[in-house]
Length: 122
Image 1 (cartoon, rainbow, N blue to C red):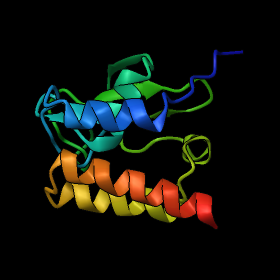
Image 2 (cartoon, rainbow, N blue to C red):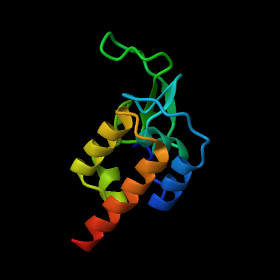
Image 3 (cartoon, rainbow, N blue to C red):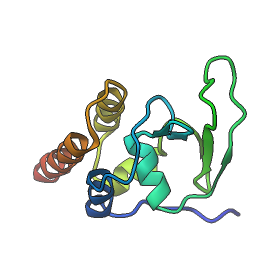
């Protein structure tokens, strides 16, 4: 059985998003153009990755496929990660939309913190 990978804390994730170390891209976790907000999470969580063979639908040069241990993904994180982070499926969809619309990482970090806090209060 493969090793299951788990996300770093929300604090570490939002710190990385605000660090300025990651160039923002869209549609995939990580490609030659940069990272989406979820790709930053996978990267700092040290999930193994390898080049993904793009199809006509996903033709971003240098797309990386991450092996989370129980599933291999290139465009989203596993549902179990959302639960571990205190986020809902709706939160993740909202983060993807905001990232792909070009909302800066520092604003996305604020949104993540607000989402987690709101979910904890419920």
